[in-house]
Image 1 (tube, rainbow, N blue to C red):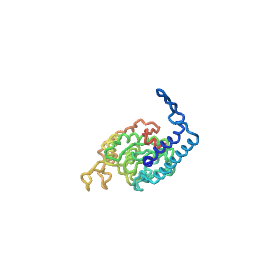
Image 2 (spheres, rainbow, N blue to C red; image 1 turned 90 degrees about the vertical axis):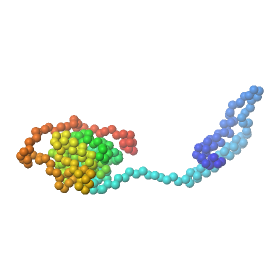
Image 3 (tube, rainbow, N blue to C red; image 1 turned 120 degrees about the vertical axis):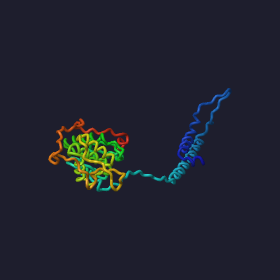
Image 4 (tube, rainbow, N blue to C red; image 1 turned 45 degrees about the vertical axis):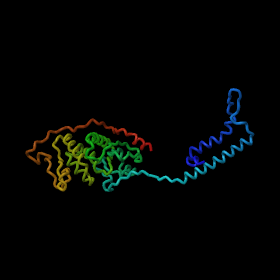
Length: 307
């Protein structure tokens, strides 16, 4: 009885099964033959004896089940609820329209109502920690899986996503690029698009975006890659420079953050008579066709989509 109370579930099941069927089971066992005689394992008992054993077995079985039920109900297991929370300034997380057809926001602005309000047709998720929320509706989306660190290699996405955004806007779509706060990762993607398709240089793209969204601050590693991207796309020396912060001399920051920025190269020969005008160049494209091609999501994203 002690063993049954200590381990109520498996032992109760075994006891119930054994006690319920053993009286009948042994009645139909075949005879066991020895050298000179044969016998039954259990002698044939009268009918009332069999019924009595069944009632006794059921009585003990029900008693053990009741004790087990009371025992398990008396045990309380602590519940641990896993929650995913982000502490984001609502001012940074609000949705902003940079140019017609291109929006940027943080995770706090991701809602089905906002998607309908701005008629978003495509979403670019620039994070690793925010899943592609199917609750936003039937919207095409892609995920870039970018960490907000200076070591993250974002350069290939600058070219590809710029061409994707341009193709989608030209086709009448409205694209939303988001990260957690809408400050660094998503801002870098939008800056790359503005640099290639809307502005003359990276400095102009930054000031245009800052006029639409107050806080635009990619990390230093993203700035290095944006500067390299500008030099590749515009084929110039770059309009943004990294300088040392006077408050923290060991830190570098782009000069667009300073109140008095380092003067950039004049944009036209009229501003500088000694400047040799650049030859007109055809705007390059990475070969992206007018088709949205989201990356394949891993098992975690597929499971989230199914849920």
